[in-house]
Length: 345
Picture 1 (cartoon, one colour):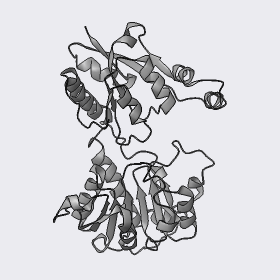
Picture 2 (picture 1 turned 60 degrees about the horizontal axis):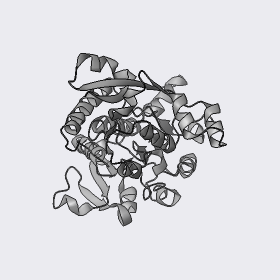
Picture 3 (picture 1 turned 30 degrees about the horizontal axis):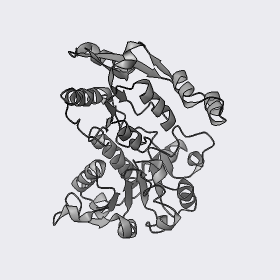
Picture 4 (picture 1 turned 60 degrees about the vertical axis):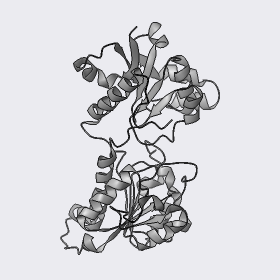
C-alpha cells in the first residue's frame, strides 16, 4: 500500500525531483477566505466544514482521503481551529502534521493529542533568518537609517551622529532558538547582551552568548531599563499574551527600540502606539502584528517611528527546499514508527 501525503501545490517541483518509494503526494491549494465567507461563518450561516471546503482544492478525492499519512502546512495557509478539526476529520488516517513555522499558538494542540496525531514545527529552520531581521532592525535604528531616508525624500543634507553599537545593550526576551541566534549575532558585533528566560538557572555559570540572563517573571523590568534595544523572541502562550503593556513599556529607556520578531499579540498594540506617539520610546519594528494582513484602518500604519516588516523575517528563497528536507526527514521517521524531529505535540 502506498501512503499518501497532503502537501502544498507549491512543492510539486520538489516532489517531481525526488521520488519516494511507497509515498505519493496529494497536492492541495488553500485559498484565502473571502470577506463574505467570513461574514457568513460568523453569523452562523456557514459552518466550519463548508468554509474549509470552499477554500481547499485537492487534485484527488475518494481513496486519497482514506490513506493520507501526513499533512504539510505552510505559514501562509492559515486554517482557523474549527476548520482544522474538519480537516482532520476529512483525513482520519493522518498520523503526523508538519507545520513549517515556529509558533503553534494558532493550533489547538490538545485536539491533535486526542486523535493521536503528532505535530512538529520548523525547529531551527528559520531561526537564523528571523534573528538577522532583528539585528537588521537594530542596525537600522542605531545608525538612524529611517531619518536618512526622510532627509533624502525632502532633499535635505544633514550629517547625523550615531552611538557606537559597542556602547549599547540589547535585551532579548525569550532565550529559545531565535533568541540564541540574536544574542550570538549581537555579541559578535560587540554589544552587551541581556536575556530573559523562564529558567535562568539552566544556563549554569556560563550564560553565553548572553552576558547575563534574568528571570522573565519578576526581572524583565530590569532588562527593559538597561536595554537600548529590546527584542521579543518568545512564544505566544496564555501567560505571555499581552506581556508588554503600558506598565512595562514605562520601564524602557527613553529613545529605546522595540523589535518584535515573534507574535504581535505579545504586545498591547494600543499601548505601544501611544508610547511611540508621545516619544516615550524611540521606535518599534514589528514583523508579525496581531492581525495579518494588517487592515488599512489599523493604527499601526499611522503611528510615528513604527516600521512593519510584513511577516518577512522567515521569508527566503530557500524556504520550500528547507521545509521539504524537514518534511522528508520527519516522514521517514513516521514510516519507521518512531518520533519525528521537533515534535511539539
